[in-house]
Image 1 (tube, rainbow, N blue to C red):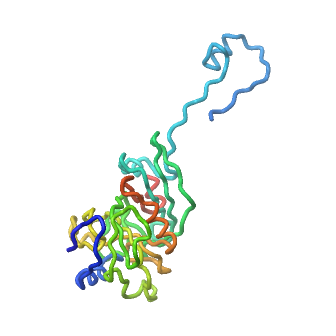
Image 2: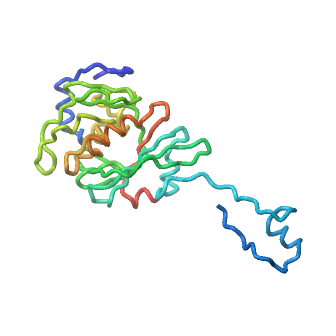
Image 3: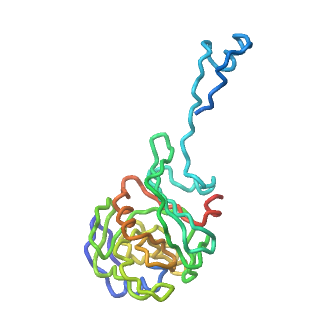
Length: 257
């Protein structure tokens, strides 16, 4: 097992590589200003001021669109960055990802445009288990990154080395190619603060693991979420360890709960 370090050395054993092959993937409305026959007291009551001037209605902090109360409640109060992965359907392997940042008033502001994604080939699940070919639904921390290519400038701890080589093929039989050139570990059934290659599974091996963001290979995954390579670079450069980033992921109906 590799020990956590701020910037990790390039090391990946054959055991870790073998494990990767067995796991998931590796304003307020304006009033009518026309003259009126209402008395002055009525105007004052309408405006809420003695002068008759309108008072702006305080704006509520903006929430992330399309997330229901249960999902929103799972986002930690300390998180100031979130990437929301919305699957097209419970049993679909495509979707979109959108980044958000939390402001001082607690509201969320979108960052950039939506990105296309792939997820597990069989879709999503509330209870992921090893080999089900579904991605876990939930809110998970993003604390660790790595890849076969060198650090593109992320604020997360970044591990690199030959162990990040994607062997084998995708579900359509095509080579995985550069799939692990950049990865961000999704903290489902893993030990935060360690290399993405760490094989610790707090919930047990039967509950799967090795769920990552990684480079898209043109098809659904075993459980990971994929982005085009340039988008993976952008994600890594955007993620800030001090902002306690999280991913909110699942099919659209589940996230609306």
